[in-house]
Amino acid sequence: MSSTKVVLTAETVPHVALDIMNNTHFEELELVRSLGELITHYQQGDNDILSQALNEWLEHTQTHFSRENKLMVDIQFPMYLVHSGEHAQVLEEMESIVTSWNNDHDIALLSEYVFTAWPQWFQQHVNSMDMVTAQFAVMNGYDPHKSAQD
Ligand SMILES: [Fe+2]
Ligand SMILES: [Fe+2]
Image (cartoon, rainbow, N blue to C red):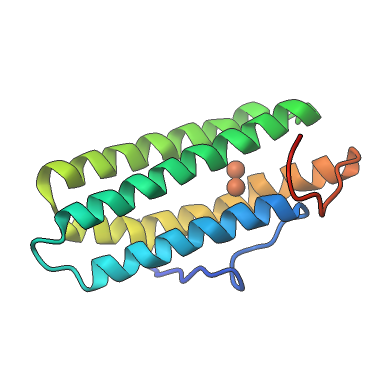
């Protein structure tokens, strides 16, 4: 695994054709930013605060992915299995990171995931799967600026 650090913000993350998807991504990056702060300033005793922040992130990711999966079903996206498969895989990975944090409180392992592995994955995923899905939705009549999915 490469150790190149990717710094993702609302400005630097790739933007897709649907506002609603972008907004979810920005929210998620904000959660990861505050999680990153907690990790940077970590001291023993902060374990519960970090567990809480990780749970919040996990819940946000679950909602994020299930919304996109639903969108793909609605628009009959032809690469549904590939895109939802990436979601399932990363969710499993996050769940195992959170579980191992709760058991071992290994800050180095968590730090590697939050600052390196996950941002690389996220950037690559948004730039490919999410990008193509959003384009397909707009081509099929979705309003790019609609604020909620029906
Ligand atoms: Fe996404
Ligand atoms: Fe996605």
